[in-house]
Image 1 (cartoon, rainbow, N blue to C red):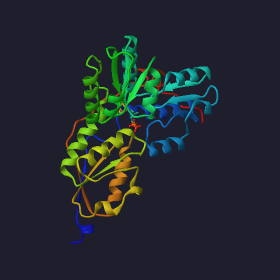
Image 2 (cartoon, rainbow, N blue to C red):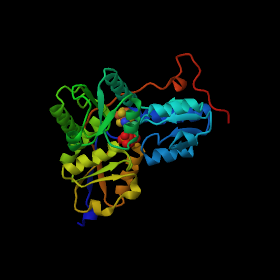
Image 3 (tube, rainbow, N blue to C red):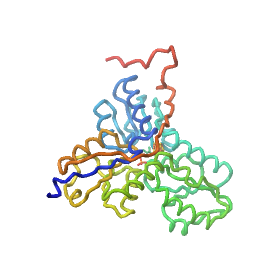
Image 4 (tube, protein in one colour):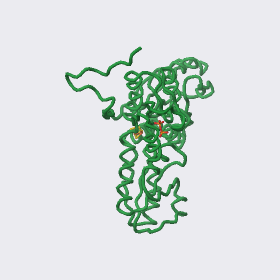
Length: 327
Ligand code: 10E
Ligand code: SF4
């Protein structure tokens, strides 16, 4: 039987896709559109997913890179990745009505960094240069913050006082790479304080563990997510690092028939910012190349939920629901 007619086993990772911080951030934009009416300004992509951004744009969200693109007084949402203090201050100066969609687990890292700085320690942030979360975290901590991305960076680092140091990390890093960098830091600066890999959030850790299990049972891996999504890239890298061809794709239009030739099992996962609807579209797209049988791996059940900002909170029992904007 030609390969194109043989059934392909498609195995879905569990958990995959939306984390609690992403669900909250997207719902903040949706609730703001409903309560205040369009346009609602959003600084930076609310989450790094093309489909999510396109969908919210169609519904009246305007995405900007910087606040000088927002008219004075307009309702403005900060993305889930967080912002620097200077951005908050600029919003205050321009009289913007800010709603902060920073994930509480990113805000927790900001607090941790500020606490270490208040103890007189210099901070080392483990993270990727230029990433929105990294720029926000550096800009939330008073004083000097050194960014390290690799073990080699740790070796080159010059600090003011090796006895007064602390490290924190980006929330979406590779757990394994970060362990190596922390080991290099503690070897070079034995009195450094830090959270081990606990700043890497639960969702990142769970999705990385799940893709590792997946990689053991499949011939190739698809990660649904956008190219600028850090956590999605880490999932693809883990698959590739375990010797499986691994592809990061935005949607079904990126599928390539050559990927499915000569394999019998395909693993599918999704980054924390990728909607399940995209996963389902990708599965439908695979059917264009091969008949498939879909199954889901057993995995951790997540039930994390975060509270909404005060302006958009759920009504208390007996209170009227969120008012709709006038048409
Ligand atoms: O590029 P990232 O993985 O940081 O972001 P994302 O928008 O793809 O996924 C959500 C993760 C956030 C907001 C960072 N903690
Ligand atoms: Fe929050 Fe983690 Fe999701 Fe980032 S990946 S938004 S830190 S839950």
